Image (cartoon, rainbow over all chains, first blue to last red):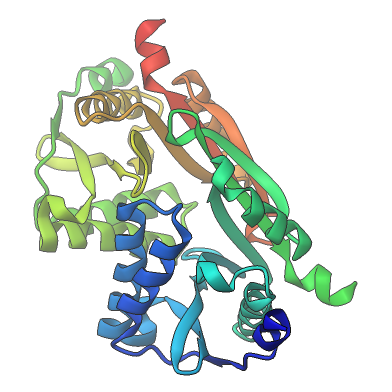
Length: 173
Length: 173
């Protein structure tokens, strides 16, 4: 009955950023095993910048907590010099809690928040490394389409894939 | 004989960033007439950030001077989390001095500097607005190819075009 119990775990979402979040996010990203150290450092920096500069940083967050432990998060924000485009900089869920719908809840709440902020288009950039295949499937199931591919962008053989969702069109559909 | 005299104008390039550069660049971008105010503000911010933080800002520059007046510039830097990819954030020449090869000199020196810094790929993002057509031609003539198009990225009807050049391939060719 383990699975059922897990499914009943109560998830709490918060937008407020707390001083313990950089460390909590580091642990989540390490658990996923496919992020490079320099990528994890950037993820932490964005949270630190938000803690230092507040909303003026341009970085917004959702943190998912289960029993007072941060188990997932999203980091997003308006893309400078665009009218209604937002970037989902990060989305991650602790490895042992993946495939239980927490990512879907996080993404869906993030999209609602983006709509409230006037956003209509969401962009997500990912690597073309095979490690990311479950992530691409997750985006496709969530209504994103592959909009661009830049070969060798991250490194030789490692392309940048950009996924796109038109929230206005989804709302009408 | 005016044209010939203009062609003989001596251009000096410098990489050092000076306190007067944000204002000089603002005037160049205003003269071009197709940048929005918020874009010009971002261009100035990148120079201010370099002045404040030095090379750690990640922003590098070339300024073109004629008779002690800044008449053009490029702003570029390594793209975080990539091995050998660089972004050309800005390239601009004063309106009255365009079409005389100064942009070509600036771009060529910038590419050489990127090679020295270990860069192999250069990306340039532009709007799809018709104002930019001469700019696209300039990139194409300079060896860039259109690598990606994101429709409605900047605003409805205003796509983001990403141009790409492989400096390693160009050097071999």
